[in-house]
Image (cartoon, rainbow, N blue to C red; front, top):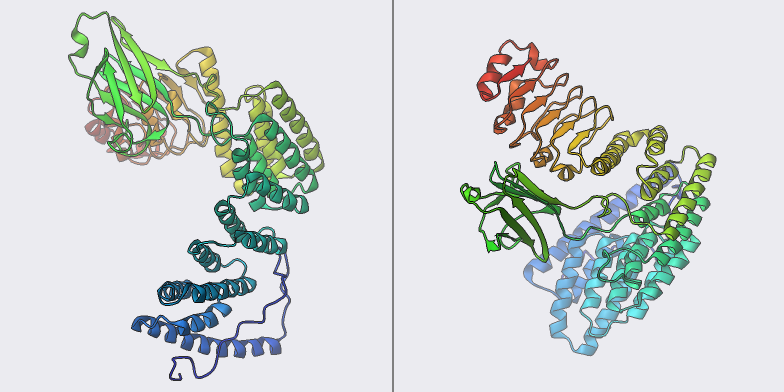
Length: 588
């Protein structure tokens, strides 16, 4: 080291800046000979030695508080060779903030201009360097009048070299926001890149951010969705991408976003009052935590506020769709012909009336009316989606193993009419599992989700509280918040491995059948106040302790456990009787 702290007059030199051409996706590396490999090894060792010496000098200067331009020079040597050394960028920021207080505005402006040039040279070395792009954001954020036009040109230049550089796309979004670039202009920019190459995740994603801003829907409509004319135009664009390159994923993902539904508005889906249990249960449109400062509920009974303690069905203090509270035990002893219950959650309100002589009363939203499982289709939109479905089927005939095409056919059928296309959807799921065996488990879960949605709709149409899901090959239970009022549930002969905690939301459940699965855990069968019969025959329950949560179900009287491994244990019957003294019959 010389007296300045620089390594012996030697400097680490970054590779000469190449022309504006970067490694593209899919390029193959060129193999080197042994002699070339040895020469590179020697060169790397020499660079590493100088690299370490320069790094030690920087840390020493930083520790001593010498935040001057010599630190900028040393860090530029390091970052010119390795732009991903985050600590070096932190050092430069410390030096620049210090020099900003020491230099005149003109001198500091010259320093910033040099820093911007240095950053561009680092990006030439590695155009996907997190630290370099972040440092550029930081630097421009401190300037009184940044040249945002130049930054947009820089982004365009880098994206011309690699249109899928998501680091540069992130930076462009930052610049466009700061420069207040109209969304229409940015959308036109994405048009130009998508037209040049459909395989561009970032450009498709940027469109999904820009379009809702370009033509926002009225306040009465769900946020984040598109007006119908824009949606139809986008569907046509993405269909062109399908047929241009059916095996590219990016357009298929964008199409899935187009078919998606906006997040539902906050709503109280169901309000249930039970006289016998002196309890009020409420189901929300999303999981919440009821707590002061997070979510507050106000309950009015007969128009008077009633302070209550809220809890989840499973007793866990975590976000949940369903919350309940106890009502005063003497509340229903009066002679009043009815009691009105009104719950307020922010600006949302729901009311329910319990008349004298009734054991319970509820007020529940319709899954069909609320479009919970499908989008609302106009005639024009339905016609376009039907045309898309036929086009995808034609493409599938040409590309029978194309998994994206098969999945999109399923999603289009769901969007058009999930019940009408139920049988066809199941056939396409079978073909999709053959085409994409690595994701068989995910596809089984997705199929289970869609089937449960269908049967919830069928149950609603039939206006019953009994749900038979047996022999459906279900691997997953979902939408259990929609089953709050169900009294009988049959899950027998599926592929379930557990009864999940969400099952505790079924507050009205009286009979649960789950024979012939692969169940090892019943942790979800907890605090079910009306459960009387539970059948778990022919499962994989290994030990009586796996059933200890059943003790929290006060009315459970019949438990069937035949053909489970625990039945082979001699002590099992005695342990079960001791653990579940309130159960009248335990069949092993």
